[in-house]
Image 1 (tube, one colour):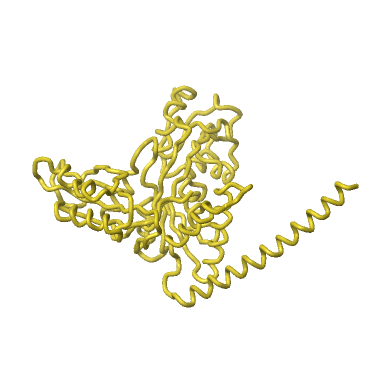
Image 2 (tube, helix red, strand yellow):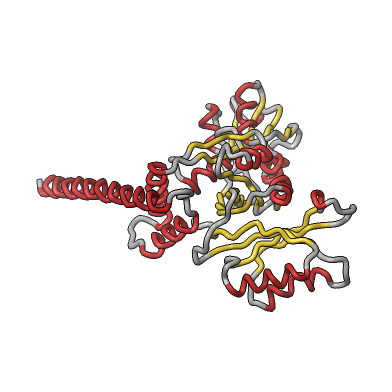
Length: 359
């Protein structure tokens, strides 16, 4: 009897807190609306959202983990923004891709998502104004750079205003009773490579066919007898495919990094990255000479990747370098380092400064 009384009191307390949460969330929404009225123009501020989410993690007292609280606050911010400025976000589709999951992780559930058939189409959607933001993959911890995204960052006028990292867990799925009945495996080329060893062990003689996306692979597997796909759980649910084997990626820590592309970058958030593309002059020790300003100014470089200089009209065997550095280009040390690099480089394109991925 005492337990029933305690349960009743606890439930009354929970109901009271729920009512207070409802009031506070709506009060937050009203404040956000007023901010939008004052600012006008572009209301989405990636640096401000990053600061809020970091503060949630830093001040969270538990027992809910910080990531869970960040997800809740992300959805609140997403819904509040939608009241004043509904967003459309382009991504590599169709529905059920990891790119869709990355878009939802970064923007929350309120924006309208625009699926695109190819990475080129994501860039085109943002450049044309059909979507103010796009989400594209740029690198994977197992397979490295996504070349098409890097090439388009070089040729497009768009900038980077954010990044999001997504753990990637692949599954073998198909409308067969067991993996022994699989006659063909569809997936994106990167995903096939990320599961290369597992597929060699378990399906060594089964043909692998690369397609535009993992969701497209799941669609094909759902429509063809004997076909299977390597894709995520969302694609399995979307196309009604039983999962034959879960978590088949060769590296359990397999992670893909996505960037948010737009016509603008972001203001300083306190924990930022700056990305750029450059080329060296033809001289001895050119790369050392080019990168020296970073060391001279105490700026850490987190990524250096070379690609053929296809869009610069250069000769064969000429390359450009994709560089990520720690800090925002408005910070004095970073600004000095970039000025030094630009005085030494044959070509420099700043892709923008933006908040580091928060969770």
